Image (cartoon, rainbow, N blue to C red):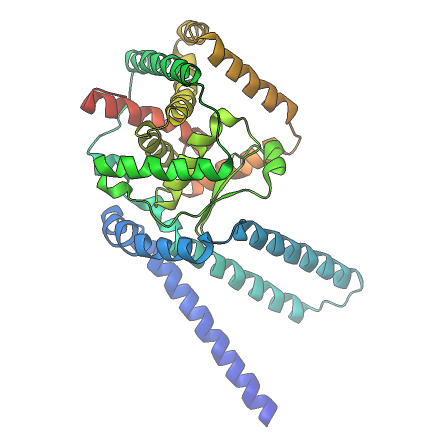
Length: 367
C-alpha cells in the first residue's frame, strides 16, 4: 500500500513538472512575439537586474566557472551515452525503461531551453540598439559601401599610426579587461543604455581548442560570464572584449554585439581599442564590397599602410596554422543556431553590422 501511494505521488509530481515546463515554454513564446514587450519588460527591465546578480555571483572567481560547468556537463553526457550503449549491447534496456529515459531526456532539454531563454535568450527578440539610437538600417548600395570602406580605411591607417607613434603595447588580460570597462564608462556618457558595472570577463579555458574550432569569444548565459580567447592575435582582442561585454548587456544578435562593441571601443581613451574595432569593421566592409566590386575591394587593401598589412599577414598565418577538419562542422552548427535565434543570415549576421554603420553614419555624419 505504501509503495502504491508513493508511486501515485511521484506520478502526480511528474505531471506537475511537465505542466509547469510546458506553461513556461508557452509564456516564453508569447513574450517573444512582441519586440516592444521584450525591450521594455525583459531586456531593459528584468534582464538588466538579473544579469548583474549573475556577474556579482560569478565575477569574483578568477577563472571561468562557466567553462568548468561546460566541461562537467560534457563529461556527464559522454558517460551517459557510453553507459546506455553498454546497457543496450547487453540487452538490459527494455521498452518501458527506454521510454522512461526518453521522457527524462525531453524534460532535460525543456529545462535547458527554459533556463537559457529566461536567463538571456529572450534578448534575441528585442528591439535592440538600432531602435535605441533611432537609426534605420536599410538596403544599401555600392556607393554606400564604398563610402564606408573609404572612411574605415582612413581610420585604420590613422589609428595604427598613432599606436606606433605613442609606442603603445598590448596589455595583459587583466589590464585589457579594465581598459574595456573604461571604454564602456566613456560610451555610457553618450549612450545611457550602455551602462556596464560588476565586471565578469574571463580568459577562456579552451583558448587553444577555440583556435581550431574558430571561436574568439563567447558569452555563457548560465553564469553571466564573458569569455575571451586570449590566444588569438593581440590586435583582435580589444574589440572581441567589447563585443562580448555587449552580449552581457543583453545585445544577443551578433550584428548588435558588434555595433555595441564598436560604440564602446571608439569611445575608449585607448587607441589600441580604436584600431582593433576599425580594423575588424574594415574587414567586414571590405568583404562586403568584394561581392559588388572586387576591384575596389582589392584596391582598398593595397592602400593600407605597411604595419596594418603586417597585422593582416599575422592574422592570415594564424588562421592557416589552425585549420581543422572540424571547423566546417562547427561553422555549420553555429550558423544554424543563429538562424534558429532570429538571425536568418546565419554566420553572415556578423557582417550585418555594415548596414548599421552606414545608417549610423548617415544620421550622425561620423564613424
